[in-house]
Image (tube, rainbow, N blue to C red; front, side, top):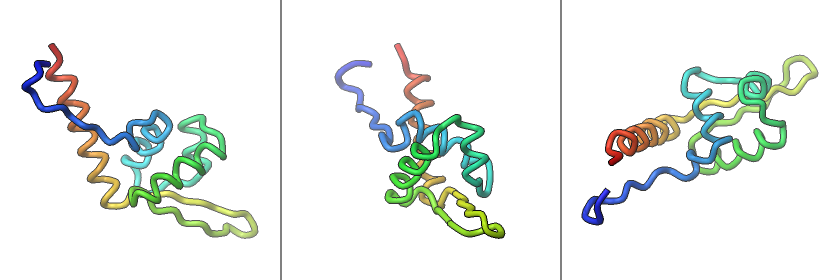
Length: 101
């Protein structure tokens, strides 16, 4: 890349490895519960909770808490804003990889 080419700014919120794993898993489903994400990512309860809170604050993820009988159940889904942001992130990373010199 020469100095005249514009710098590509990627979404640092998504780019963090744990959040990237979480968003990538949510992008292929309508919604996912905590157990599904924990098994797919290997992240701890605290990590999932912390990262999902950050994504929710950004408007990328919707979190719903309910009960299945007496057991708490937390489900997560990407918002339209989150899907757009993830699509943009993927395009930016793909562009960076294609334009390497």
